[in-house]
Image (cartoon, rainbow, N blue to C red; front, side, top):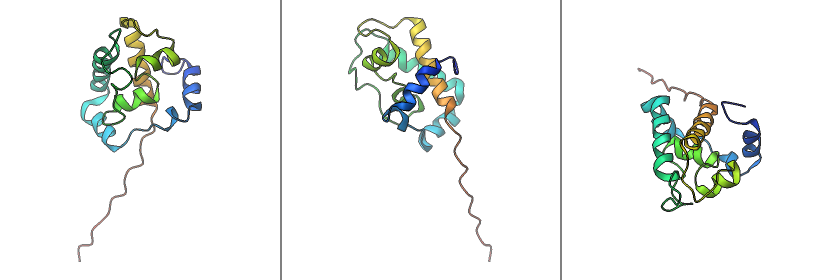
Length: 131
């Protein structure tokens, strides 16, 4: 277990060329700075409850944007973006509502992925000459 998530999942995700290409961009990092880890975890729980938890979510397969919020990026990186990916990668059955435990598991996977992202190099500061 790595971050409460089976190590085998991280290895499988790393082998996927699609899943392994996701990274947090500057916009997503600003969202994390603004809301903090606890706020992002609340957002994740809300997104999961609203967009994934119903047995037949609206726009399933297209309900998760590719960028704009760290949770969205993490959902694609961890295959928790739609019910088909949840079934294929995590063994969570489609077409039945997610239990509270399944929702917590998905949130934990998303938050673990976000926590595993490397800190970006600080941008070099440019000094202006006074004269």
